[in-house]
Image (cartoon, rainbow, N blue to C red; front, side, top):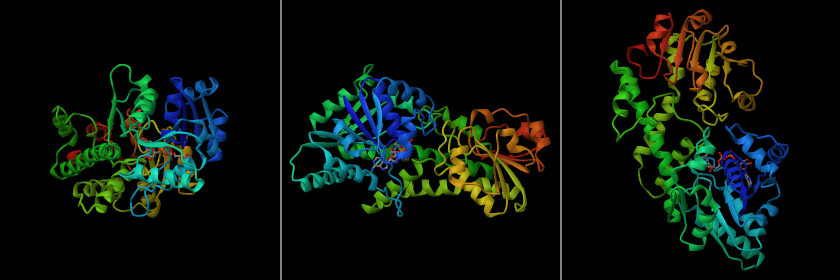
Length: 443
Ligand code: NAD
């Protein structure tokens, strides 16, 4: 099939490369000329394991191309995937300007029947807006052409995006058209051989399914952080509680790690957008509002713990920071807890020496050159000459540490562990002051 993908970010590139890999002819379009030039030069502008190779192979095979030309992209595919960003608007609702800009272009340039597919995460009712926008552009041309709009939300997670796209447990398609069902069956057939993963439902149900999935995962995290904060005050180790509840198959071990709050481009904005949707229909979504509040508070706990450990004397101190990305295996720092921490540290007059295996370039892009930020070449350099260490991201390479070495390196022997990577006793034995999340009297 000929497929055009609008938006060549995490979702657009992964979808485009994976669909090309199973034999489709794919054209990825983006309005960012630098991004497209990078891709055409054989480089990948984001860090996602396996994506470089997949893009290279399929580009070399001629099945995957890149363009900034909207008209070309609209005319190329019979399936037009919209995978542009839907960032939060000022009031928290999803900003649909990029999605609707693509819809307008589709109406302006299409010459024959198209299936328009909303892959971006968009509020219930957006497919209707996309349909109306395409139709208005067609009407302006005075050309009666047929098209369908469906919802096909994406559930991939950064860091394991290719695996999720190709082997995810479900492919959700919201449509009431048999023609679209057939087209989507054909598109996803290579991923649907072992058992039928395609779930057809109403367009609105598909739109809400994506928000419900992210809200559920965010709720699990905030719930666990709430328990951790309680455990801390009750002199209980939350890690024992985590194992205790995770063993119940109705609860399970997934997504119940306490930590320094969720970040990334999806959970914060999607929970906010769902809260906003609830307000629009006069429903007080108390649980969702609390999920967000608990998370915002949790992102501040690293600073609070450090400030307390240093008796409020942060001015002039140098803090080592391990992990900048919002989670391991990505360079994405959108809404990352590391940013909340660094910005609070700078406001308090402290300096930061940071290291992340992948997000250094992204950190430089966001914050530029500044006197109170040193980007270290490795985790050892980050700690050299520092007063205290904070761990923000659970990268594998931070899991094993020589605590005796750490004690010698840090001027004040303070370690704040936002991901509960270590056993409190091991650090205490090495003479370090250890502050985890909900680790009872150690915290
Ligand atoms: P991104 O910011 O990485 O990429 C979006 C791209 O769209 C950018 O490169 C931008 O230049 C481009 N763009 C903007 N306007 C355009 C236009 N008119 N035409 C063509 N390109 C345009 O975003 P992302 O992380 O890939 O997310 C895209 C959507 O998918 C969002 O709605 C997001 O919520 C959803 N989503 C993201 C993830 C994830 O893990 N990142 C997972 C599932 C769903």
